[in-house]
Length: 234
Length: 377
Ligand SMILES: Nc1ncnc2c1ncn2[C@@H]1O[C@H](COP(=O)(O)OP(=O)(O)O)[C@@H](O)[C@H]1O
Ligand SMILES: [Mg+2]
View 1 (cartoon, rainbow over the protein chains, first blue to last red):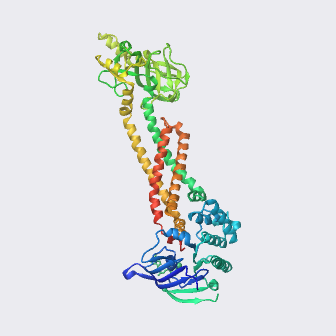
View 2: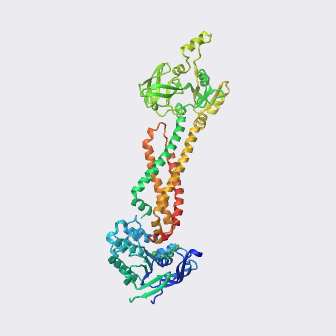
View 3: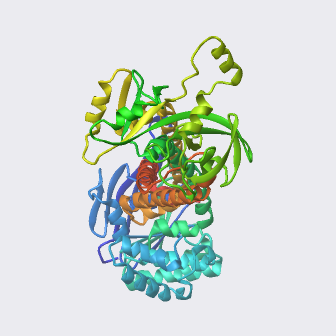
């Protein structure tokens, strides 16, 4: 990895609660993800995968360590950035386990919403949302409500939404859990393509063995520590 | 794309049912305001219809509505001669029960001298009273049609004219009779009592008594000055139209007004609590969507806007539903339900304020939703 990392964690720890009931969810985690890289995060349930993703997404403050995103220091004992929502809006694209599309907006408007939140004019946002959906091969379903989409279609729309503001960092928590193996692989290929084309850092939490071969690198967590990093030949 | 509207459209059935529910509540609150206004207007209907600018009543009383008053009939001539007075008429007032075509009805009988002040303002049907005896002009609220006959006292009367919206402060419909008829109705003693009185050597009972004399003034005459002149006479007191109206609304219907006013406030308070609960439930049902919005970076104002706009839309649709409901049933109320543009506008403002306050709780709760709630199952 030659380029500067887009996601950089140094000695990150996260502790829930204090005293006897304290849970150390993360301990001394060091991780760097560079542009165009697709990294998998695996580990048994309770090993801290979600916690790690939440820390990177700035939804959860770490207890110790340093966090930088896209070269900018974000956390060092405290948040160094004031508007975290703006940071998420502009730098981070999210893909959820259950796609989390807003049920009351059409597929296109779900994608366009992310753009208008970032300040794009509505008409332009709709147009670009449509283009993005076409690119992900769900352009035909742009006017459908999420409830009418198949699992695979919904996940593509969710990916389109994550890409809406061309974020340098894409985080996904079990994005293929609701998909069959064929669609899971297709979705992963899509993420790989996006990472390459946009030089984005993609971090995917998964315990879906079917897609392990789709990652550049696999990070294994156990009890909140990085147990192993398996580098795959690109 | 407006999030509030999109969410409402998505669950339009539930939204409409909610609005109908709120509409029923606001409809009741609106009808309270209407009934309140109706009580005030009905209290003033009689005095306004008579067009009297001055009320001359018995000394020491604030009659003839707030207190009983009796003055000799010839006071009318004295009043008519006061400078500034254009015309004066004697007036009797009396409640009566009569057998109407549809059962017993309570009436307020007004006796006046046709051609002099004290008669009904305008008729919607038939003609005014003339010289003939045993004729009535009745208000439509009595249910008496034109040409109907009914017994009042010992005599049989026929309805020759119909008015609309003329009731006494208690809501009883007004009927007008000539002064002479009504005096006989009111003051004539039953034959046995009259005979006893005569046998005892008394003079025949004086029947030329009225409850008040009403006067119309010349243009430019000062009502208070004329009232002052009347008050200098022994045995008489006077009220200007303004004083009479003030007395009617302040004293005669005061309790009814307060009762309705307090009830309206309670009802609005209850509406506020219910609207707040509904908005809170609606917001909490969208917990996951709100968490997702936060996660994809929606600022607080987007989320507060979503809740507030929905609260306002529920209030607006509920208010319109309530208003339509009330306007479609208000003619079936036993007493007047008066809703003017002003009252509707004020109530709309009150509803908007209630919705605004009701949404504060939900907005606070929405802003506290943890974006982590969007994750996980
Ligand atoms: N909000 C929280 N409060 C307390 N403990 C938590 C919280 N979130 C996670 N944990 C604990 O932290 C550990 C790691 O959880 P998590 O990151 O969800 O694991 P994974 O996603 O790998 O299953 C678990 O022991 C879990 O119980
Ligand atoms: Mg998890």
